[in-house]
Length: 218
Ligand SMILES: Nc1ncnc2c1ncn2[C@@H]1O[C@H](COP(=O)(O)OP(=O)(O)OP(=O)(O)O)[C@@H](O)[C@H]1O
Ligand SMILES: [Mg+2]
Image 1 (spheres, helix red, strand yellow):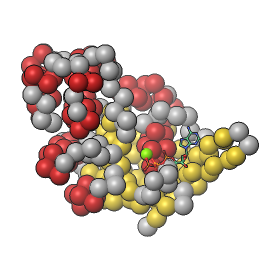
Image 2 (tube, protein in one colour):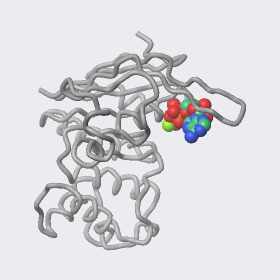
Image 3 (cartoon, helix red, strand yellow):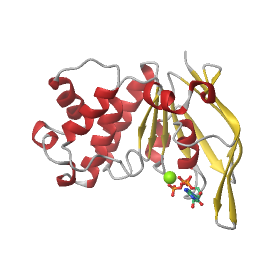
Image 4 (cartoon, helix red, strand yellow):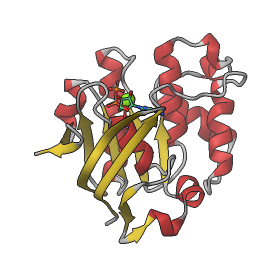
């Protein structure tokens, strides 16, 4: 079993003269095999928290331990490359590429050995057929782009999956399908952390954490 422990995490944004203390001592644990959902009002610090969990930003105060080893020791770039996979709130797809190429580039950077069929199959799992897979991503709808971002995340084999509003643009039926995929990944010994406003996502999660006033509200 793999375990991620967030220990007394504090994070402050400095905006000119203004100081915005967003995380004020977050203590929370995640383990493989379970689907987690982080909820909280807009601006409560959900994206900030998972950016730190994904080693996209340097820690200020507190620590994040993966199997008892600090991510500061592992190193941000090593952690991002080999430990964690992210679905961004704003997708962050490479807009000049097709859906297939977006997934392929990510898999190329990972340890996964694959053939062309693997990429198409992964896209098919999220409901992107071959014709759409070969389209430049900007010629896909918002919800389809979101599914490409999910495919890109699940195509590689890192132990931690973090997704910021992965179903924000999807209809209920497609949302259910995507939640099911994340659930399966959790069952396959991954740590899966979703941020979501959706009651449906929270309903399917094994554990729900509510972030409020800079801490996890229990
Ligand atoms: N780079 C930044 N510089 C300054 N302030 C920031 C920065 N990023 C976020 N903030 C502020 O920190 C607070 C938390 O932002 P964050 O993006 O973590 O919220 P969130 O819970 O993900 O919200 P949402 O549900 O709207 O996505 C907000 O008040 C936001 O304005
Ligand atoms: Mg956010």
